[in-house]
Image (tube, rainbow, N blue to C red; front, side):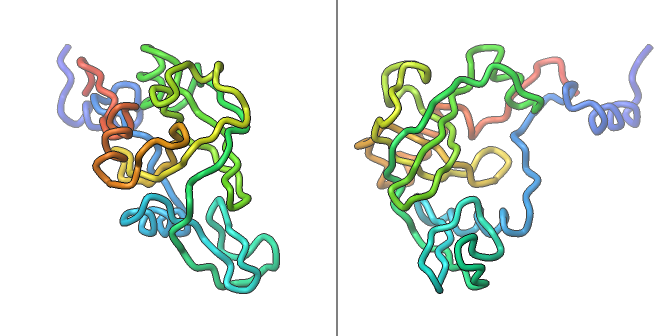
Length: 188
């Protein structure tokens, strides 16, 4: 029995596991879209409240401290300390499922010096050890980069790693696999 083009199209839409190219999640709210746009030209841009100067993350429509309605995107230092690092062994997203077949996906919770906590993809190669071996309190630097779904995501590297130029940040995102789709050879 051969699969017709219309059957192939329906299967592709209804069964993500059968798709040849799997991408990270790309659904974002309009505030998430603003996060993408604000982080294109800089290493890290976060919202700052114009009334109380508090840094906001995740992006919001109003300030979580004073409920002020004017939040501006500003370039922000990505330096901070590691709270915890873990390795993801299971995911519901097909992009990560395919990556997890080869090795666990490292992620980290980080307290930035601007007093916000973020969750970021962790570049364990910059630390030279596995995610579970990195001690809490280790100095890290967080930057944003677009993944293969064209969404800005946060990536954490060891403190002192040179990320001043976009080419260096792109090389790190490439190395951890965020800029490439996850392929399935026999996919539709």
